[in-house]
Amino acid sequence: MKHYLKPTLFLLFAGLFLVSCQKEEIEFVDETPSDAITAESELAKLLINTSQNSGSIDDFIDGTSCSSIQYPYQVIVNGQTITIANEGDLNNLASTTASITIVFPVTVIFEDFSILEVNSQQELNELGALCQTIDEAINCIELVYPVTFFTYNANNEQTGTVVINSNAELFQFINGLDTGVYIAIDFPIEVILGDGSQTTVSSNTQLQGLIENCVEPNDDPPAPLDLETVLTTDSWFVSYFFDDEDETYEYAGFEFFFNPGGEATASDGSTSIAGSWSVTTSSDGQLKLNLDFGDDDPFDELEEDWKVIEFTNELIRLFDVIGGDGTTDYLTFSRTPTDGGGSVEAQQLRDVLTDGNWFVSLYLEDGDEDETSDFNSFTFNFSENGQVAASNNSVTLNGSWFVSESDSNLKLVLNFFDAYPLDELDEDWKVTSFSSTQIELREDDDEDGDILIFEKL
Image 1 (tube, rainbow, N blue to C red):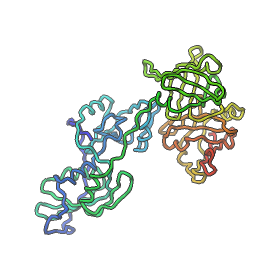
Image 2: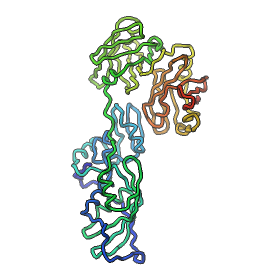
Image 3: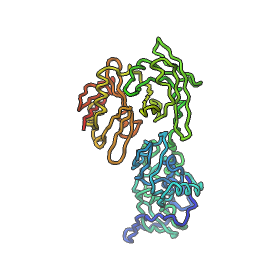
Image 4: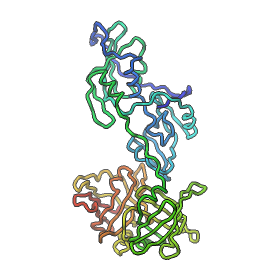
């Protein structure tokens, strides 16, 4: 955990804890309890570290562990404005490879729960420059509130009780203890450990041991993906190729291998096409995948400096703007073998999907648990370039789609890249039926699988 050399403009935390000290309810004792806690005791220090605000949770956004940004706030990713309302929204962004821009102003919260409004990235950077190291926050244990403390004076008299209802109140209470003041916890209390389990605590010794020995959760965001590593790990298939029209079928059955040395091969088992690849970055920061598989049709159409839209371990989406007429070609590699989806039925499904907006009229988890309400607010728009945009009043989440055929089955492959709640739709859906107004899907190869139905708005 970090601490700022705070300027005088910083706002002080103003929340106070609830104290009850009616004389008729005070029970006087002859001596201070043996399990009393003072400001100097080790348990008091551990309770401060346990209750302080952890600023490291959003370091990949604000760049500093001295503070965190108060929910809700907005960021811009790939041109989309996304609202972060809770920790779940934050975790959904942790693995993105795109740049994240904060929409200012935002309110930041420091380790002592004091707050400050920040109006620009420059101000946030200046705060980061003031960051000083103090004890790290302890995030692997959490007290279940409310927790009651008894207070005692130097004369060994119980002077009242303090009811604590949050980490902020506990931090202020323990951090503000005066010399000569003693407190004792009204045991038993409940605590939640880093693995999510809950346990009952009956003494200071037990509580101190749990805090000292708890295992910190690994909340660091995943390391950013590297395109070269992703590309050269296992093989790929062309799941979408658009050049004025869908020509994915041209590459049906071909498996692409990209070797670390820059050599590449496309093979369907009987024919092998040699090629080359390289990854470059333009002066404006645009990531590119340069492909060359020779002059033979249709592989000559892959010879471009493809601009990278996005990539994951399972998908690489590319585009190229043709200089002559200004049209755009699209190329998508995925891990899923496909025969190209070149049938009349496959093209009919593509035409239906790209004609208007859609909504989820039914989603059954495991075939019987109705979770349609998770998607009620979203409208889906399928573009010819293989991108699908799901929008509601607060956010637009982009994903990818393509139609394929495998084992004589028509499939709709959706990928929203683990963005909640649309990650439930990330699947190779078997198309059971479709019309101009409705598309019925079932989880592939699972009789008790999920059921998804889109209807046209």
